[in-house]
Length: 188
Length: 211
Image (cartoon, rainbow over all chains, first blue to last red; front, side):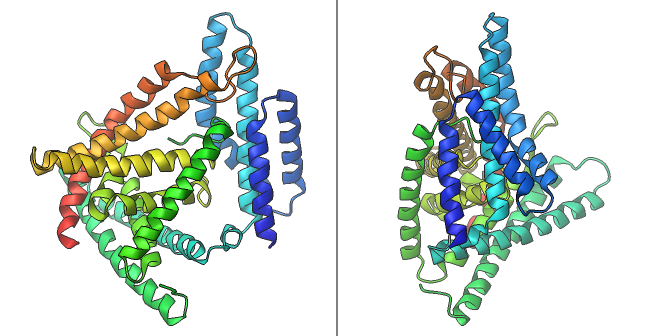
C-alpha cells in the first residue's frame, strides 16, 4: 500500500512540477527536493544527485544553452530566464523521479496488475542476464581481433549474436513459462 | 530521443499517455489471444532480445558507427503489434529501472518509435517486397522506420514553442520550432537509418527461417 501511495504522490508531484514556469517557485521546489534527499533514509545520496544531474544535463544544457546564445546574439536578455526556468524544472523532475525510484519498490507499486508485475520482473531479469552475456561476447570478439575489427567481422558477429540471443529468448521463455506454471503463477 | 523531463508540456504528455496506454492494452489483449499460453514470459524474452538489438553498434562507411533501434527487425519478424508491445516495455524499463530518458517523454517515444516505427517498417516491407529485391526492401523498411520516428518526435517537440508560450511570447517548454528541430533531428537520423537498415537486413535474414 505504501508503494502505491508513493506512486500516486509521485505522479501528482511530477504533473505539478511540469506545469511550473515561475523561477522562484521552481527554486523553492528544488530546495525542498534537495532537503528531502538530505533527510531521506537512503544510501549514496551524492551518487543519486550526480546521477540526476548527469541524466538531464547533456540534453537540457545543449538545448537551453543554444537557445540562450541565440537570444543573447539578437540582444534579448530574457533568454537567461528561459535557461534558468527549463533547467530548474528539468532538474526538479529528474531528481523527483530518481528519489521515487530509490525509496519505492516499483514492482510493488505496479502490482495492481499481476501480469504487468510479472512482465516487468521477468523482462528486467532477462535484460540483466543478456547484458552480461553481451559484454562477454564483446570481450571475446575484442580478444580475438588484433587492432580494428573489420566490417565483415562485425557483420558476422551481429549475425551470430542475433542467432544466439534469439535461441536463448525462445529457450528462456519456455523455461520461465514451465517454472511459472509449476508454481501456479500462470493464468493463461 | 532521450528527451529529459521538463521539455514536454503536460498538455502533450498526459493525452499521449492516455492514447499509449489504450493502444498498449489493445495490443496486449491481441497478443494474449494469438498466443495460447506463455504470453508473459515470451513477451519478456522478446523485449530482452530487442534490448540486445538496440545495444548493437554498426560500422558505417567512412569509419563512423551508429546505434540502431532494432525496431524494424522485431516488427518484420514478430509483427508490428508485438513489436510495439515489446519495444514499449523496454522504453518503460529504460525510463524507470535503468534511469535513461524522461518519464514524461516515454509516451512520445513509445508512440513515435515503437508504434509508428513498427508499423512503418511493416507496411514499407509489404509495399516494396513485390517491387524491389528482398535485400533492398528490408533495408528500406529499417531506414524508413527510423526516419518516420525521428520526424514524429521532431513534430511533437517543434509544436511546443507555437502552442506554449508566456504573455511575452517566450517559450515555456521546448524552445525551437519546426524550422530548427526537423533538420536537427532528421539529418543525423539519416545515418542512424542507414545503420537500422543494415541491422534489419542482417537480423531478419538470419532469423526468419527459424520462425
